[in-house]
Image (cartoon, rainbow, N blue to C red; front, top):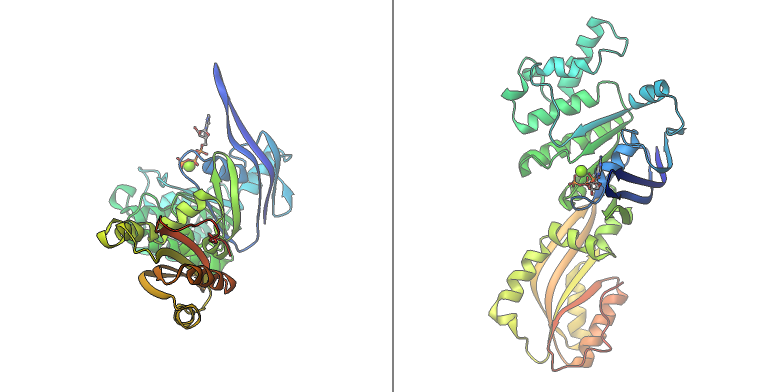
Length: 358
Ligand SMILES: Nc1ncnc2c1ncn2[C@@H]1O[C@H](COP(=O)(O)OP(=O)(O)OP(=O)(O)O)[C@@H](O)[C@H]1O
Ligand SMILES: [Mg+2]
């Protein structure tokens, strides 16, 4: 549905060094995807997503949307094509002097519909986003979540195939965020809408995205299915995002801050384990004892369900004889469990211990 190839965007500024906001990015988005683009502020996310509807022309590269190369279209053809791509923004961008109905109706003005057809369409759109009762309200009389619903209705006015969302939920509280994400998911399922969603919160990706790209300093440093990225993140930035989303960072802070774990027993390791699918941890942990006489003490556990696949994280302490602990970790690894030693007793050699990786 969307194919970006070797996209670069450079901003030239008078008397200042040029800014390379996007560097050589290639992304494929299929019909029906909910595609997340994550990264910290300034990573180039907004610039990249604006390339998709050519609000931002790339300095180089190709932009193909549903089979059409956009960069070579005439201004008129591009205007037509843009109708198939809706967009919503962090700050809603509603017209304050018009009521909800007219805000949505405005997008239909030049679509060639009669007044009556437009009335029907706006009514349908407001029902779709659950705002029938607010048709006559003005933006100042709406909550943030309601404003974003108006913005979504407006973006859908011309029956787009694609919806671009630039930080659509970052101005909303967590509960309202979930409601808006549920609405987007519904639109994706019922209308077959392809959605591209920019966010700095992995939580948003976890809720609705089937695929994700991680951006840093203008580049896409990692991309893949959400399950793959969540279960086997490779780059430090991606790991950082995920640890925040799964609350494992907070858990580790608590564990490592407690006096019990500030110094470990000589035969003990603090280890992070994560696994995908429904391997239950209990048989594995039982195996560690029966095979290697290694005792496991679970300090923290969390399961996230992504695209109906469970992804588990555990923080455990492993106690037992040194060689046996090494074997236990190798065994876990052979069972597809990601292992990472967080803390060891410094009196012990760690050279040959397997750190991380499947
Ligand atoms: N029109 C412009 N002229 C010059 N520089 C720009 C322009 N637009 C963006 N930039 C720069 O390009 C870089 C990427 O900006 P962009 O807005 O794409 O980041 P972002 O990832 O969306 O950040 P945020 O999360 O804060 O919205 C930044 O360094 C920004 O200052
Ligand atoms: Mg931005």
